[in-house]
Image (cartoon, rainbow, N blue to C red):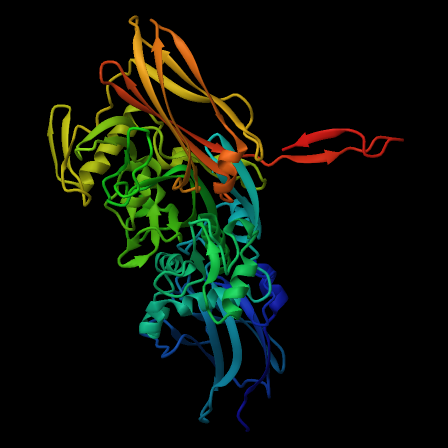
Length: 626
């Protein structure tokens, strides 16, 4: 009798797509999720005889091998619980066999080739059935990325649009973002991002074999979404100049960026800032099947020297000394969280993991960040992989202002333990509202527990000598001096101050505000106030000075006074960037040598005038709309 062969295959794309939540992918190939059965109908050249069975081979990546779990050979067998690929006969007619194929829940994800042959006495070559794509599976309890909430899976895996929050702590703005993970060619581009990873270029077979692990995959994506090191997807630009590219403020989604990178033969797309990197990474990870969300942190620290404090050096007018200040505090910073188990750390660190594709600091020689367990950050376990100290500082560093004197000595004028890491926000599940998730990252500011965690984190990072309340910490990097007692607050002030807007700050208008000073003592105080103002980027980097003046104020016992400040439109208009931000500073020098710094971030609002037509009088009436 002639040898039997598979003549046709029906991939059951619609049925499998619905079952695997992949029906929205417009790919020609079948897209399925690991750890879950998918069905094929095979048409045979003749019916199978009793001793004959169908043998399947699946393989992914170059030099696929069973040792590396990038190749599997298996045949139709009885249903069983197995850690390997299995095939079970579900139905049979004279010339067709319906087969249920199940991959292991820890299978390598990516593009697979499937071949078949029929076992018989005759030697037979494998017949290529075609390719299919295997993704992570948040619906499978045995998969490391399992998420036990259908509502959250719909939001964090299947929702192809979302909201990214930007602005400043007291004026948070929502921007829509099209993730578009189901749009034409996006899945193919996301898989090609993995193949452009330098580790793949160095050893393709080894790299592909590691793609069973969400830790490995997310770390690779974090590196590839920025263009540093590897000709990745997006090139960053923070200087306010976007010639030869698109301003980061003008992107509204990831699809155009990913298409441009792919069609441009992997030339980095110009330009991105943090929310662009986060939006693109959210697209890639949702596309690959990992539940991912975008998170915004207001007053976000960039701690360059790993000492868990933002050390800001200022002159006598409160102006930041750029050549001395390596750390910074951004008005806001945006990153991602992905949900998966931490097999490397233990189950208490499962759940949300911080990932950041914005190229800020190198991690093991590459610009990437995470995954860092959110639980580990909240508990101060900064010694755990990956990049815990950097993420901890972003949300919970102490903000220390140093006055730099002409003799190169420095004086601490302010320590703020509550300034960093405010209003940590993400889009709500099932709606466009903002959810504050600060409590996931740290205990309440000002609480004893929060200070205990901060001290624990410092001690885990540095050798610490403690005697009573006095703590001495060696600073990592920087100027090589000892920092003393920086875990303690500064003394209670005798005079306080704050800026207050007198009118809403409108673009194209003069700014009107006041510095309000209050004497907290029953003695008269004399205060010299050095005022400065500068246009800034959202990273708070100064662009140009627009204000520089001094005042002397006498405050009677318990007296409050206001110093009016006006900044005309002509003073700031030439130096304002697209971020439309201004930073004001007041260095206040009190009679007895006390000094304190007051700062104010201002974001200018656009004013749109709409003419409201009234019946019989078109064009009548004007109304300003923000």
